[in-house]
Length: 187
Image (cartoon, rainbow, N blue to C red):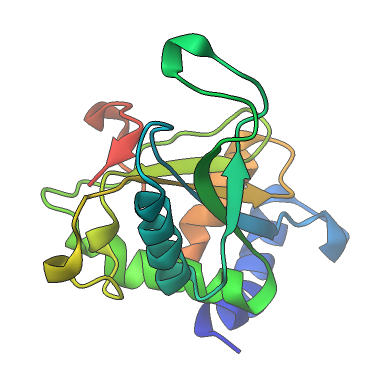
């Protein structure tokens, strides 16, 4: 069992029950899943999508699903059913392992890092955009032909953004101060 998962069960649940006044342990917000998404331009070659899927598999330790466009958009030279990206949904122990690696190894590698922006969606879910996949130690920088960004969405059972932010702070996510600004992507 990962140390982050143990810390959640022992320290975080207790701290949230005290600060928010939850009576039932099932009321305490928890992580439901983490979705990692990488998309490419529709006009790119197929091997670019293959490389993106391989990088995503190395980063998450799970085989990605190739996402396809739902409808045609002529301005983007996009047809319905064209492959446009890859995504992975992590749950359970793999989710906690990924979050722990992201907090301990990836975020400190970002140049001029001052914390992650508070990009919540209003329903307790947090999304973080990274500008390049080479921040992850699993991806060697020498072998990358094209830098690729990604979106990481952390879905929680929290009803409000405040509860979700407190949960993620207790788990160790370093949020930026309020004066640092509200940019969506870091790295």
